[in-house]
Image (cartoon, rainbow, N blue to C red):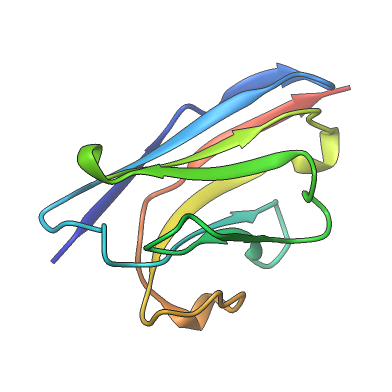
Length: 124
């Protein structure tokens, strides 16, 4: 069993930056692809990005490409989401998740363990 805990959310003005962390406990996540998702009020949870387990390759949603960067520190069992040039439409609860398999999957069904989420609010 693995537990994922996100942190780093908060309130920021448009154009600002935040860095979210996702720290795992219970089991190592170094061998797993790890994804980030977000869910705005009254909307479905949507894919933000994913990082692979070996060379740090990433895949991003078009809406965040060029602004968000995912990285990982396997020694700390932690994955990060650096968010720059934030927009009001980035406001959502952000979740990290562990992929079921070695795939840059965008569907929520491809992930088995989820954190509780952290709120990001971007004011205009």
